Length: 217
Image (tube, rainbow, N blue to C red):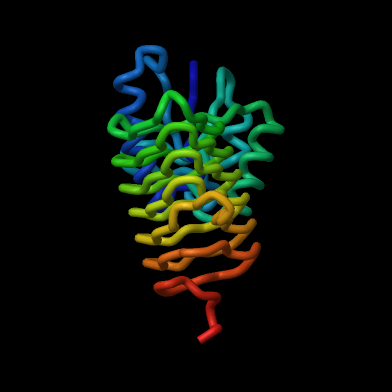
């Protein structure tokens, strides 16, 4: 039996469950798949009709085991992905029925594409990307691993977003132009509603319109 685990039974995990249930229902190869949550703090509960088990109980299950990590912290997401992969489970990619994915781009393993999301042509998406409701990645963007888009992010063409960056709800990232790349550095945070017009250094948090480093006045 194929068993797909959603790691993390919080709010986002429940949203992912709704998308995953629909994906299983419309995909013939997933007939008979069992869905479950993996969350040590909530093991033994049933949430939205789905059993919650501990990580140890999940690791002991027989049959094909796949997983998607629905944890907002990118560092925790990376740790959980590594732990489950080392135990023989494989990542599963969740894609909503109305998500639009260009056939001329690429989507990394373990990504979550929520409803009303778009990846345009020639965009390259890294592993374990979270693309929340109504967000898009425009043409020729390069998105690293463990990147998070909150809802309604507008990432315009040619932008580079490095690993572990977080882009807040409603943020807009200006399109790159020849000779003027827009790079969001590793671990950077773009605040809610920010309008990014130039590159953001690794680890820096920017806010406002135009976006500036937090605390810079």
